[in-house]
Every structure is written in structure tokens, then in C-alpha cells.
Amino acid sequence: MKHMRIYKFQILFFALAATLFASCKKTDYLDINAGDRPALSAKVKFINARQSTVAVNFWDFTRKVTAAALQRNTASGYLDTQFGKVQFNLTEGTEASYRASYIFGGSANFVQETNSASFAGPNGPIADFAHSLFTVKKRLTSTLNPGNIDSLILVYDDLTLPATGKAKVRFANFSPDAPKVDLTYAAGTEIFTGVAYGNFGNQTIIPYTSGKAPAVIEGLTWKTLGPFKEVEAGTNLSLVIKDNTTKAVIPLTNSALNAATFEAGKIYTVYINGTVGGAPGITATIITHN
Image (cartoon, rainbow, N blue to C red; front, side, top):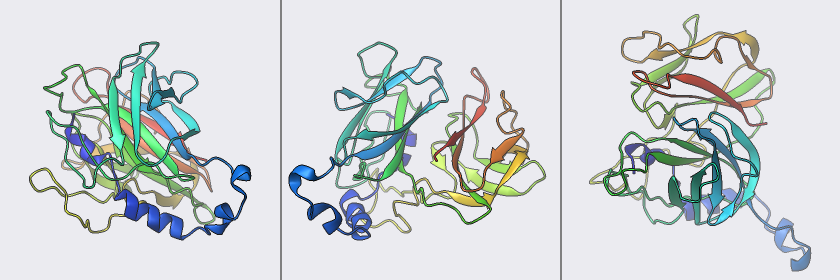
């Protein structure tokens, strides 16, 4: 599938799960009679960031998770899904054939995606944790399945509230022909810089040698694949996207960043998609997490 999927951010799932659950009291769940325990599930926000304007549905295995098809650049709420090793699938409209299908948590190592082999990684959704699953346009079309032009990217959402008077923001570049970009205030202050296609600002990059990542990746935690950054809350904020090399402003075809609001205590994902040199053109979208 595609190059970007290296960023489908898979975390070393078993080690990660151990770390995450270590912060919880197991007795909170295990000391309840089995019949009285609430069913465990992962919480996933599904986001349609594709190029195509056709609405999509998301599935875990063969169960349709989204109650209604998601239009382009819209998101569901946090929905209950399977956790652990999970196959997420994508369909268009009322069609049954998969436009994208990936297994999360099904590999012992991170394996880089190519145009002839799918991405693999050890992280999957974790019970009672929040996640975002994006569907995006791939940069490299599969030679094995030329009709497969979409990818899925899973990240973990740190929904810890920001400090008083602050908001939390993360930024992603999902434009397949865009250069590395910066998200800045129009007045010049940078928020995130040098964000390549398929990446989130300030994320831990997974290195590959001959297509395989090392067993230990410096700086990799559940929070560093799609990290949030605290910013000052405000209204009527003017934000722009810039070419990281030339610092030229990249024109957008919508006005989402012209008078943006980052409310105190709120958590947001900002992303761009579309194409620089074609249609649809580049747009910015702001998704609220809480």
C-alpha cells in the first residue's frame, strides 16, 4: 500500500499495553463479579480525510462501526470497537468491497509499507483508551491492487485536559503532493514545522533499515505517534500553512484557518488534505476531540 503507512503509527502493542495498564488498578475491574463487569472496548474516532468526495463506512472485522457513512472531512464521535489485534476496513457508500483494509497489532515489528507490500506493526487499539483512525489518500499506488488508493492511520489520543487557559492541538499533513509544511499563526509564530506527508507534527519517526524498524525506537510512546501541543486559547485566530523550505504560504481552498477558535480546555486535530497541483485543492480541517 503506501509509503505513508509507516506512519500508521503502530506502537509496540504488548509493551505499550503493559505500560498503559500499569497506571490503572486492575482490582477496579477484576474484583467485580464476572457477570457484573462492563464489556471492555476501545474508543475510536473515525475520520474521513480522503481525496474522494464519496462518503465511507468503517468496519472492525465484519461489523460496520459507523452508523451512517461519513462525508469527506468529517468525523464520528468516539465509538466502541474491538481491541488488541484488529482488522479495520473501509467501504464506500453502500458498496461491500473494501477500499482499504489493515490489521493493527498483528506484527512483532514495524514493517515499512511499499507499493507491493502492506504496512505491519505491533500496536493495536487498547481497551478503554481513545484513538483516532484516519482514512487518507496514499502516495504510492499498490502494484498488486492498483484500485487500492486509500490508507488507514491509527494513533492514540491523549485526552488529558490542557492547563488553564490553554487548548491542545495536533497537526497532520495528508496531502500526497504537498512538501513538508509548517502550521503557523499568520503573524509568524510557528506551531508545528517540517511536517511531511503522512506525518503528525513533532511525532516520533520510526526508522527503517531494509524495510524493518529496530526493536527499540528512541522516544516512542503511545503519546508520541500523534502528539498534541498546548497553545494559548483564543478566537478569530488566523493560521496559515507554509512550505517549510521556501516559507511561502500555501493557498487553501477553504476558510477553516481564517478565523479559527481554540477554546480553553478543548483538544483539536488540524489536518490538511487535497492536492497542491490538482483537484480537489488543499483544504484544512479542524476536528474537536472533547
